[in-house]
Amino acid sequence: MLAKDKRYELIVPMVSAGRIHHFRDLFHFIPKTIVARDLGINNVRFTRLIDDVEDFSLKDLLRLAALMEMEPLSLLRLIFDQHQADKKAKRPKGSK
Image 1: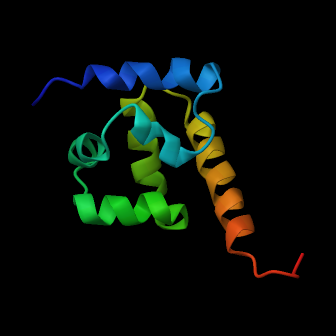
Image 2 (image 1 turned 60 degrees about the horizontal axis):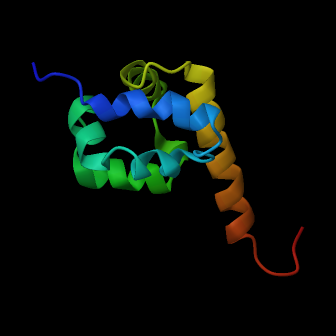
């Protein structure tokens, strides 16, 4: 098995420092190809999951939290915040 990428260690401090607000922000610090490989997910499918977080399985989220040595609820918060922002951005003009 390959050694875990050292960039995973950046994630928790960056979340704590407020530099990561949404799930997709994680990939400014660690390439999505590395994460997809470590999760055993096809890179194209993983890119779709990043863009549409509703399709993530709980199993994959728990494995990702473990890779990042982060509390699963903290990761879920990033995902939820992204989902809410995306939903708000897709809302048609004039609707509330």
